[in-house]
Image: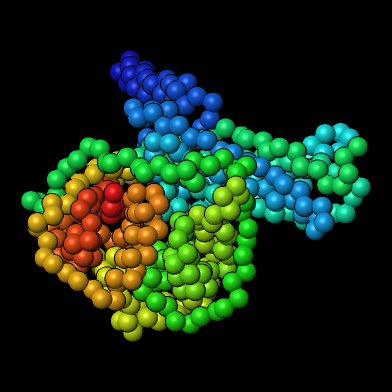
Length: 167
Length: 226
């Protein structure tokens, strides 16, 4: 009987110790991954862990065309010390109303890119004929650099574009 | 491999006033390409090749010369459903086009050329010729190593049918940004690669050629002319 109890106890110790080690591993992972969690199947090196400093920028500008009732929002993304090979960016097009900004359309820019430092693109949005309205967009997402892998760019707001006559 | 030399730095990019312009200084305009052509020139084949295996590609082509713009708009852009012209507002200079969304008829015609063995031979070499084998590795990491081609290790290869394409690539990417990257489809670092007619052709045309090799799989990710 004693032998059985001893065996059960030993088994319990063996089971508990890998579980606690796993718990430590989870904690460490969550601490080092910072403010975002990235599932990176193809690239092991993130911008945070790379020894090579990479800086990137994302710029966006909206222009309203009153006569034709559309707003064109253009953007560029650049990595200064690396080449862009993939873009995974989303543009949220927003309209201002009395209770704040509301997203009314989104466009994805999900492309392979053949190894260039800077990419440009745009989206156009048809808007209703109104006396006065305010629009803007927010760009979010990442570009992938050839050497450093995923590079998250900070969310970037455009200027506010006005349709109709400003009050 | 005595024709490859490991290097640790690539030459830096060529800077130019247009590429450093702010988004406020440029305009992007979607242009409507009316002509639909069935002929796929070697230059068009070069840009259609990557779409054979992947459809969602943005192809930016620098085009600051009138002559290259004409080639782009007549031979390449008609094979795409969306062409965006990028212009520097102050100087009123077009400096780049984006091509997106390949035309399905064009891609079908490209596949037909492939099946009938009528693709330009150097383009077939880049996209449809296999060299070497992948390293079997469970890791999916993508660490790149750069190797420079040693220039006297290749035979002299000329190609009348690719010369126009080379001129286009030279006058666009190499002139504008100082480098050109070509992405072969199924090339792995191996001795067989020394037999590639494309590498031999490029070696005759350009001095500094590098292979960017994925160290985990041995895949040649890019041929970089810089």
